[in-house]
Image 1 (spheres, one colour):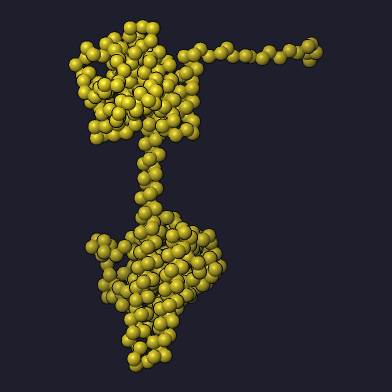
Image 2 (spheres, helix red, strand yellow):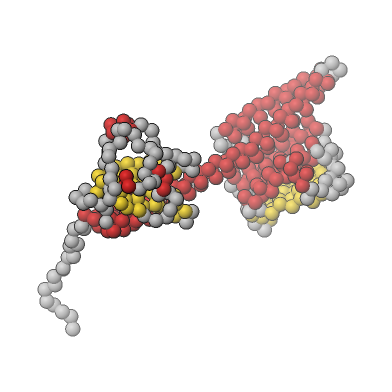
Length: 388
């Protein structure tokens, strides 16, 4: 039976957090925020000083070379920090906290024999001390340093527990920062390797064709001026294409003709250029709907480009066949030559020719299957199959 009485809504109003819990909460939220690592660590230093009731606080992260990569302080004015001079080194008590994964506190730091080394004349006098290492799975990666307990002669066990809690969150922030830096370095290395492959494909191959066209023109200049003029015009065209591709590489774009003519049209132009420059018979056949995104087409084009140039540069081939077809949701390209052939597993050959490695890396990035069949005296076939 439904209840028809007056309903009242009871709203829960949480009690305000104590200063201690609020400081801990703010510190945890800072680590989870999108602030920079320096901003997060600076907040943690401020919270550490407030929680422990210290006059001064610092957080140091060593650089592995006897100094600090970061050394953030709280409780000191900018003028005082400037008057003390350069950052401290990781010696004395500062260094000691980086070698033993255990907190240390004392009512008079001057009594400890490890208290020595860096101590500028402008540095304020300090007696009570609490040091807490920041520990991650990699070991000690930093430390909190707190001095001059306010309202008491020394820091207590409660102070130590609170700073240990902050140290755990500082370890997360520092580790995240290191992972970000490592990720950024890997991205830079990856981009550098990508540019190396692109420069090999675009610059080396295009300039090789350009040089051959110029040499052909020079040889025909006296005996056949009209033919030389044709070669000079071809050289000019190759130079323009090289400039376009270099500009495309710099801007991070794909080759201009690939956008305009598609994969088949761009391959056809490549084949025509190689026929004219090298005098090699190259047959191109394409069947089926050859479509797909630009990134895939670019990778397929580069693999075909490498296979074709290997055939005319290294294999001394007289005939080259290029087959491009699409069926059953897969795109297949096959480049076959009748050249001298080689042993694909020969380590010395792989180290000498970047092209073999670049083709395999590009195929792997596509999620495709690359097969290189060759043997000395039996020609070479490069076959790539990739999903449409």
